[in-house]
Length: 221
Ligand code: SF4
Image (cartoon, rainbow, N blue to C red; front, side, top):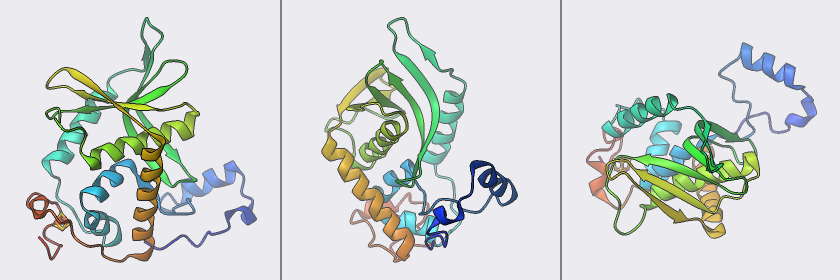
């Protein structure tokens, strides 16, 4: 994926109606000034950076894994939930799609809660509660969601919550500024991969290749 030729968008001075007209006429044009990265891509990149390469640089067709199918089912269920306020004034916003053009980041958030001062993303998970904390790819996917909430609403986000439905238990994880800065670095690395189109090193953990949707394209697979 090459950087867009629209490097200096300001000189075109298009107003929002003209932009909308272009969007309607050419829905496949990327109107962002840089590659757009999803919060899910952050997770995939940390799992194995080659997946991002095969998915977006090579645009290789991918088979749906059971994890993807579960993700779609989960979002169908969440879509039926309505945004609401609890008695204790906690507001819950379900299935929120957020983007930030400056960062080139987009993401669909299961839901987030807001207490009037701070907000935090909540991720619904079907698996077991990890004994040694969140795995790194999952942790940074949710941190990317937290960054989107901060950028879009100007709320302070200093924790994230995982709702482990199998155990009917929620676990909160602290979120530090260092975590957010590290996440921004990861987003930058993904962007570089998409711009320079250089195949990254495979994951060191060959066990990940067994179930990988890219194993038919990857020499490692
Ligand atoms: S087969 Fe292994 S090395 Fe290749 S993309 Fe998948 S996880 Fe990465």
